[in-house]
Length: 131
Image 1 (cartoon, rainbow, N blue to C red):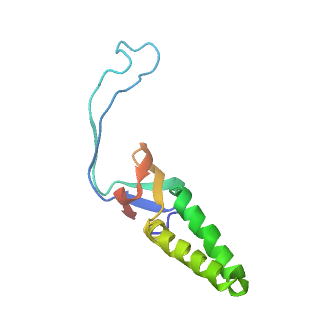
Image 2 (cartoon, helix red, strand yellow):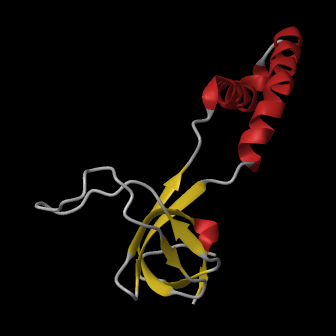
Image 3 (spheres, rainbow, N blue to C red):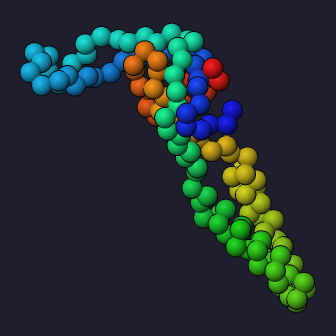
């Protein structure tokens, strides 16, 4: 699914939210105390208000592959055979890291304002489907 702000979505699964809660001023409950558990049913609809794509850092091997591959593509035909062969070997040695990086999908999280008034922030994309 293509994620964009304003898109209508619904929960694909039942969601249970737990954790510590900070209540409004003047509350008799201590900060961090559990006050209960919230369940949101699959099918609850809402609107995407923010999309955040988190791409993994390419890492030194991937950056080096890109640098050497660019060098080979640009200057390879003009290089002496021995230097070109050495560069081809270096690129080939780094290719597994490049392939693994290319196969990784960017991680997407969304902020959804649900129709019942709740907001789910930093939710994984696979928790929602198109409405």
